[in-house]
Image (cartoon, rainbow, N blue to C red; front, side):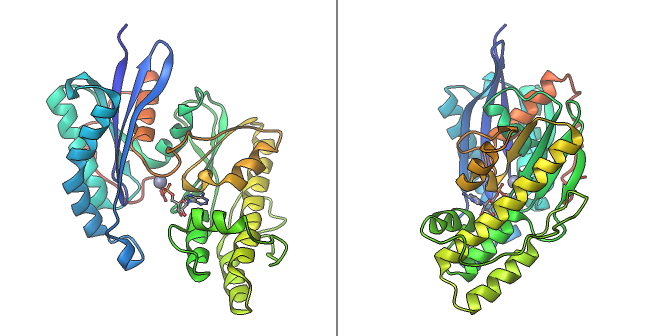
Length: 327
Ligand code: KG4
Ligand code: ZN
């Protein structure tokens, strides 16, 4: 049979992402992944929702054309469309969601409203076929969520952050240490030149029986160390080691409790080399998304759409709305 091409759209925040996945006899494959990163927000030091929506409106046509060109396909080759419905900024989400619905309607193909976090998890399907059961850690600028996936399409929340997301802590500490934006890559780079023993960080929620995370304590400790004159490189190295340690330790404990051997680690922070190395050193079978698929993108939504198709899930109604806080 001819392969099926699924177009995926993510406009949940400040990246306009369009990707294409191919579903065929050989499994799933990413054929295109184009992202327009909005630079307009840098001057405000944070994402301005209305500006994000407007940029999505202006860019989405061009990003889709780029994705089709990268895959060497015509729009009429697309056999299904998936778009993020939430969680995210509602105005921003609506752009991609409406665009996706319109496209699916015009092409007369199935439409899937996708969950952003399910997209992050399925980004790892770019590397190997994901087969439940497994555990999934989504670590991004907005989320630090640990899910158990006992079967295809079922997500049981095992634990999450009580306060800041891991990526948010990277961003805030980078800003206070004057290391620039985005904070994750800046911290990772500075950490290479720093001493991880220089600043003592107390492990958050030590001794807990649950699988929760907390990053606000590390942020406060970093602020105090910064005021006491800690070098930015040392702060970066010490914080990164503390954050990596607690992410790996809690995930390992959950994997043991839930009896899972395979763990998916995804989201922007999963691009972190120290985190990848620490997970690789465990006895777990850890799956990371491929290059360019860790941070927000459209290909991960196409992969989630491919998984929905493969699992025989019914398409979403065209009335499906955008939700800021998707369950
Ligand atoms: O998944 P993502 O693009 O957006 C959300 O859905 O939040 O994640 C962005 C987050 C930012 O906080 C960024 O600093 C972090 O991912 N990040 C990293 C690295 N690359 C991006 N954190 C640590 N190390 C990195 N190499
Ligand atoms: Zn995300």
